[in-house]
Length: 167
Image (tube, rainbow, N blue to C red; front, side, top):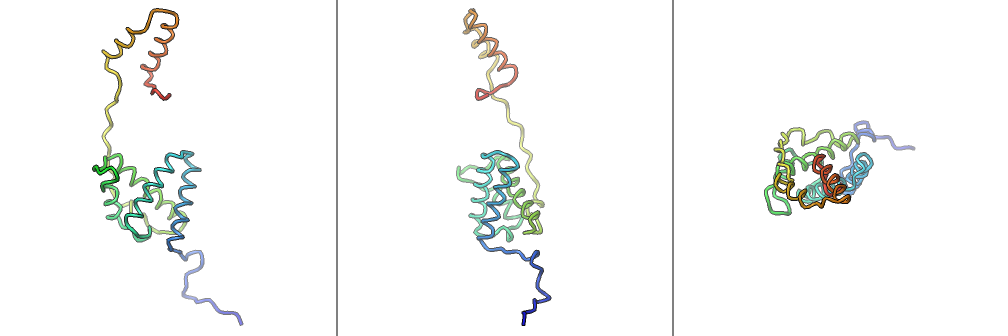
């Protein structure tokens, strides 16, 4: 005779496994999706580091995290030993919020503790570049030859378009 299912039990689709192994798989799936959607290995590495330090610090599973936990982590002193900048706090909150949105989409969680937080507004950084005097000295050092005129054109193009050395 077949066993009858408990009518008060949640349907299989609504049962949520919250073992550490399940959350490890969820983190891996989140990072795989982040790589697929963004195409940036650097973003994935940064997010992996944030999530690893975040959940490692709490020693808990993501379903037990509160908004206060997230705020404490986001504004906490990191490995550098310095108070984090508004940009760092915002990046930490964005990473965690993205992870929790993923968990909600996958029907593993019902709430995002980051929704209760107000994100900091980082002030724009001052551009770092050459002073007008340094530009004049640089241009004066270019010889008046055919190669020098080419170099001067390339240099002016870089200066006037804001190109970085790496570009």
